[in-house]
Amino acid sequence: MIDFYTWDTPNGHKVRIMLEECELDYRVHPVNLSLGEQFAPKFLAISPNNKIPAIVDPEGPDGEPISIFESGAILLYLAEKTGRLMPHDERGRWQVMEWLMFQMSAVGPMLGQLGHFLYFTSEPVPYAVERYSNEAQRLATVIDRRLEDRGYLTGEYSIADVASFPWFSRHDRLGIDLDELPNFRRWIDAIAARPAVRRGLEAME
Ligand SMILES: N[C@@H](CCC(=O)N[C@@H](CS)C(=O)NCC(=O)O)C(=O)O
Image (tube, protein in one colour):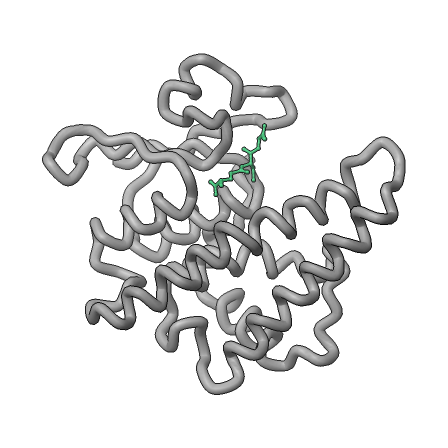
């Protein structure tokens, strides 16, 4: 049984979707970010950056317990553990790496900042909203272009899609305009229809 430390946010949803896709047994430990529970010393021991998500797998690769933080690392770990949502050929694996790193370095940070400046500042900051809105729209266009001739980011559904979906599924809330992005829309709808994804997005409490 994997211990899963999370909260209802896109980074938490990525891992929960993956746990559901892999049909792994897991126990949810809510880390209430509004109450600052991410700063508790006990949580810091498994997540040195004080952020969700994190997991503890009692059966690590050597049979000993292992804890992992950073959602990208957790997705890779679970893909390797189960042999799921990661291609078995080397070229395919590198494509997944590219699009996973694209999510971790661009999609998460930029859409995260946009959400912050849209919903969490005490007073409006128009420059920041404009900057991150433009970047979010640009990133969605990158995805749309990538999907012109394929159903998923690397052909087959993989952890690259699992990583980006929970961020982009919030396109309405983030004001991303889908009018010119038919491939992006098709991709969002296809992933949202997966039963494991629906379970992974259920509210925790
Ligand atoms: N790069 C990290 C980002 C994790 C992250 O930003 N988590 C947010 C929630 S989505 C968090 O725990 N925020 C709490 C805080 O910043 O105090 C990952 O992908 O796991």
